[in-house]
Image (cartoon, rainbow, N blue to C red):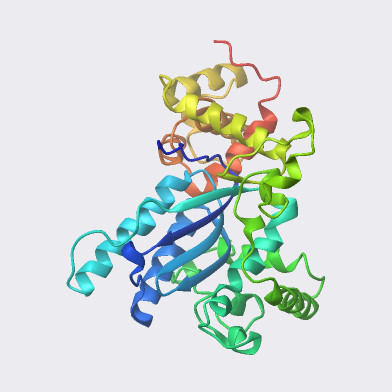
Length: 345
């Protein structure tokens, strides 16, 4: 059976898992685990990819990501290839480390974000790496202990503070999660832990595996037999969510896939086009100036280059004279500013 292409687009929530080949250990000791997390931390910050939940099990890892301007495939290739090379050198082995491709499921945020965070963070308990919730609170190799404040966040890159003016994305992501549970930090941590505790008895959940209405009903296809054809929601094993979400995601991903294989309009041409329409010289647009009009022009170009013509964020950053981590914010802003802007030369 031919494998379906991966679904990806900026801003999508992705449930990602990869196993060791023949179910062998990916992590033999704490040095391996720290090596993996250090690499993941750097990649997340550089690509502006958010990680809401993570757990390291001896023979696999499970993470919940929101993609930024860098496609998930590039993020995972950097993570898995880099780690495999380091692992093989350290343990004096050769050959593949991971079993096939990583598995990724696009997830609808509102019904599934918190459920997936809880499910992933309970992985060590289901795998019997810890005995109970109290032990999980102190478990070093999952994001649960970070959210309740028992462990320093290993997904924050180790860069001297003087170089970083703002908070790291990993720090902001922890804040984003806790905001769902309470206004004060103490209250949020307490309610989050209670939420996790309620999920212990649920065990393995087939309804969190992807596939539209079939998965939403707990994996039981029988519930669809009594429905008329027009009442059956669209399903796809690569997507976890309602039929409407499945349809929207497929359409969005197909548009991006089509653009990937279309001849790209050169970035320099886009810069010159926007320069003419705004009356701002190209060299000023690419000067790094933070003046609102110039920043808006850059954002429109970023949107047109990344979302309309499929250029890589790294290339856009180089042309516009901004950091790659700033491209996603520019794309989002440019998407709004581009309404009615027009793209006729």
